[in-house]
Length: 410
Image (cartoon, rainbow, N blue to C red; front, side, top):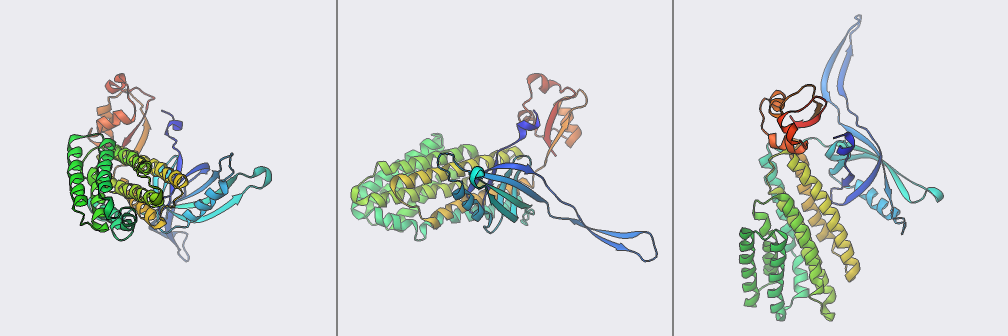
């Protein structure tokens, strides 16, 4: 494995959850010590007081390149410039140094003219965010989970109900029943058709249908029923990557329901409703991520990468949906959902700081993987992850040879 194999794509996720893919031209990092130097009169020596390290900064030069077919780079560049000005830390997926929680310091933008047109170059000073002040990962988990759940339930506070009120008047009771069943089917399929989850989804669907059958529901009650249905997959301890993929498929399938419920007089209302349902599903993804358990540092890294890709994909799906049906998804609602995902993303970057750091070395003698780990960390916990992350062959599992580059966490 060479350094080229470890280079990642470069992405920036703003505090509001917008994802930007960048082309980096250079990468460096800077830090130092805060030293108080006192020159003593009449003596050729100094008193130096070490006051700790300075902030780590990363000056980055990168470009936003537009699609050559429509020359739209300036729109993306303007969005990126605004994203860099948002309050709070963002997440920078650095090609070399991995996923980092960062603040934006100074920034500048330059645009090519005439022959050089078609790309914007940014010089940005990223400042590494300090570790969170929470006392433990458990406390951090609880706070972030609460924030994400609050974002999901924000749809019950007057925003999502309005879509229900417009789209489903009382006489459309049978449509509500069908909708509950279809959303339940989508979630069951997307989460792998696992018996335990399927049973819980079916139970929630029956409750929802019973409410619809009563005819005595309010928009708030229908909204709450749909939200509870969307949250069912978050209650189970299945693989978090599967949950992220499942919610991604759910967003696509729910947007596709607009084709099923198309009535000329209600077209815009139904399209808006399914857009809102998809946004609620995006918010539910944030809950699934913060409720998951992460045994290894690689689990966190893999989830961060999957969540950034998820955000990128569903954002594109929402844009295509708006263009197709001529609706505009409410910015406030979408921002609420994006913040739920970002709070989960930020939680992961902070949680990663509490785990051992990745180390890399070149083997200098014949040694078994178990002995190597014992030498480096005093035990061989994480042996399976060591074998997997280094792609060890059967022969290497038995004995590592000199010259082999390996990584471990310490």
